[in-house]
Image 1 (spheres, rainbow, N blue to C red):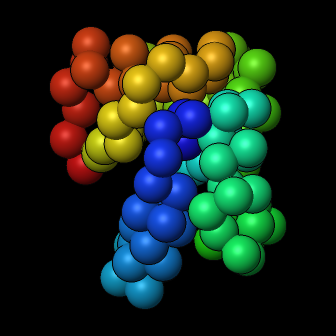
Image 2: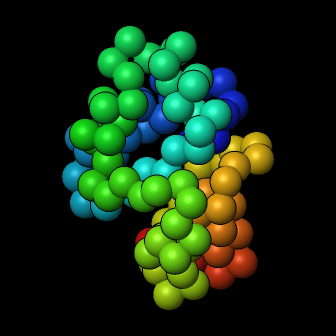
Image 3: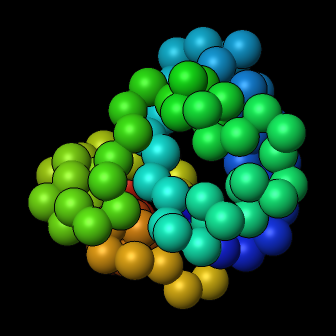
Length: 99
């Protein structure tokens, strides 16, 4: 998640994927996202982290989702983000992997 407004959509997406089953979710939050989450979600970032299967540090450019060998069905779009958000999104767009 980036600093763009709309943290509630990220929360809802994680809830829906958890309810649907069969999806492994990975979460990366930029510092700006954490600021927005504090403002927009009464549940806070803990609610997001609880719903995600894996939480990555935003500065970890070696995160599994940032690798071209990672099978990723989608990457939620965002504006500018830090290292692992940008790398993961670029990898998904470059490899065009389907689930």
